[in-house]
Length: 391
Ligand SMILES: Cc1cc2nc3c(=O)[nH]c(=O)nc-3n(C[C@H](O)[C@H](O)[C@H](O)COP(=O)(O)OP(=O)(O)OC[C@H]3O[C@@H](n4cnc5c(N)ncnc54)[C@H](O)[C@@H]3O)c2cc1C
Image (cartoon, rainbow, N blue to C red; front, side):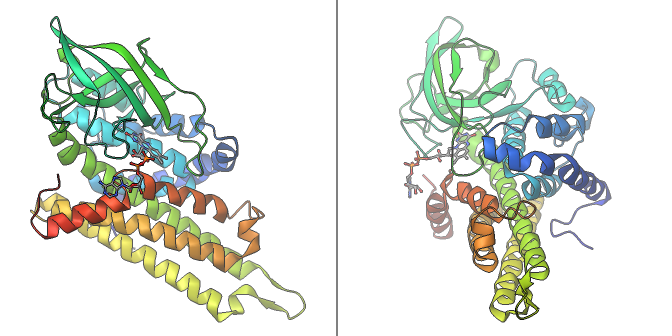
């Protein structure tokens, strides 16, 4: 069957292998990861062993050399099994792309080789307490000291905060005239000056360890710079945002597919003893399932179109990147809401351990509040369509 993201043979084979790993390993831990709000260590280790932490690292550095299409297909399979694991993977891969794009990072290729081996987990630490969801505008600053810089920051949310080996993070350049004059740098988490707060406790994605991190008097050397000084916004908008947007869209599609599958199974396998009918005999439940399926496939098709625009490097690609994230986040909200209504109290009360609608419902809600939120996306898309600059 053709894949909506138009995979070539190698990407399709990798996706099939990921689907098996997702079913055999990742899904096995997902309910307990959610219940105990703990990091999915087994699943992330399995991704590393399978080479998936180096999925999009160039093959001459030991990676699998895959592009955005395979990235989306893999994120979707993981999202189907455990959205927390998918989130860790999407943040890691988006941060890795920023590293790949760097012309200034010392030992960049050695770091990428470690990532490809599954020996180094990275993530994005952009959001700050002071600028909240407006991640493109860090309030933290680099101050020149000696040959390099020193910085302090209150990063508000960092996925994998207590488990990543490095953060791809941001600060204003020295003497910046605006927060948009930012710089992306790499912070190694072994540094004593970096302190993540333990114990993320959220409504959904409860295993993603998205904790606040305080950075105090951290020395940043020139060889730690991922972007040029003052060019951080370019890295954020041209590299990080596109990879993050398509990855989170695909992850949302994984949630949608899981909800469609679980709902179809519940409607077909559950019934009324006193009438001898099953839930699928009720037309409005079938209609809900139909709406869920159509909404899911429409959004997957839009991601397929966005991937084609990216690959062709068209001027419309940024618009499709923003649009596919918005469509997928909204699809995940609607599809999981319909799933709850179609499956009723059985879904609401956590009585469906093999068909975890209520976890999917909670996990789906994270995307909307994660920057760029749907509010930001609406504003950006409207600006792009009317020829206004995004900022
Ligand atoms: C599970 C999870 C994982 C995350 N992981 C990471 C991570 O790894 N790295 C990272 O950097 N961040 C991460 N984030 C943080 C995320 O990107 C946002 O910064 C955070 O969710 C913002 O929350 P807030 O309360 O500060 O939002 P606020 O900024 O207070 O927003 C409140 C409301 O105002 C709206 N709003 C704000 N600004 C505008 C605007 N300009 N136009 C229109 N509406 C606006 C928002 O849409 C929202 O509805 C994560 C968030 C979640 C939920």
